[in-house]
Amino acid sequence: MGELREKRLERYKKRLEMYYEAEEAVLLNQEYTIGTKSLKRADLSTIRAAIKDLEKQVESLEAAGGKNKAGRFIPRDI
Image 1 (cartoon, one colour):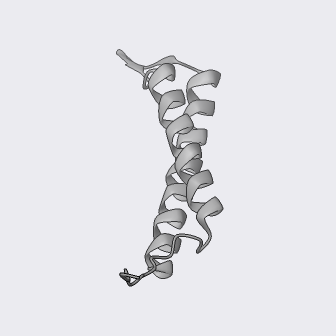
Image 2 (cartoon, helix red, strand yellow):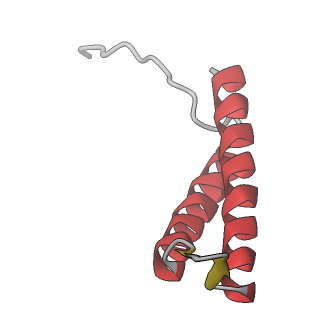
Image 3 (cartoon, helix red, strand yellow):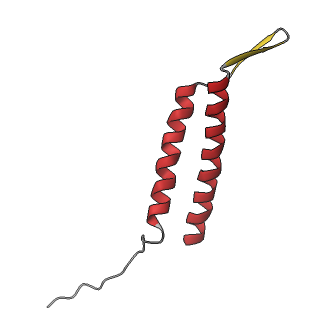
């Protein structure tokens, strides 16, 4: 299960980095024109919401760090 968690954490971190880059691109230039075409980047609030969500997921997975282990117990009638 640890390997799956590590892969998920790596994937979240990669996506988070991409969202940081997207946020920077939007902050630098929301709209731009190439020839006769006008292009608009993604909505900044949507990007920031995704960043916040991914940061929480990364934090949660890093904090877990193998602490989520299932245990068994045997109920006894005394």
